[in-house]
Structure formats: C-alpha cells, structure tokens
Image (tube, rainbow, N blue to C red; front, side, top):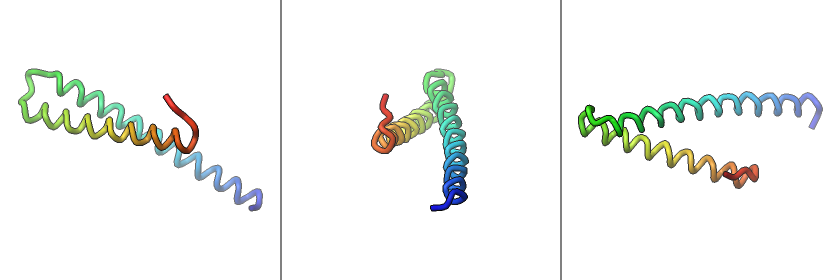
Length: 77
C-alpha cells in the first residue's frame, strides 16, 4: 500500500467516524426525548407507548454498537 493510499484510507475512516458520531448524537437526543414523553402523564397513552417502543429500540441499538466496539476495538464500559 502506498503512502497516498494509506492517507486516503485514514481520511475516509476519519470522515465515516465523524458521520457515525453525529448519528449517535442524534440518537441520544431522540432517546432523551422519548424518555421525557414516556414520563409525561399529560400525553395520550398511545403516544407514550410509541415513545417507550422507540426508546427501547434505541437502547437496543446502543447495546449492539457497544458490543461491536468491544469486539473490534477492545472498548468496554
């Protein structure tokens, strides 16, 4: 692999990492919004149920990402 190819791969890795972090940040924000909706007793029950489902789905994604990071990078909580 030439130096230019290695630099290109590092740049692509960096860019994809930034995109992943932005997506993760958006998911965290959505998770907090879901938690607030679930605990808001003034909202209709069906809205609260959907917020609970979406929050659980996001938590499953977080768990999957954490497990993958632990396997690949040795990062664990």
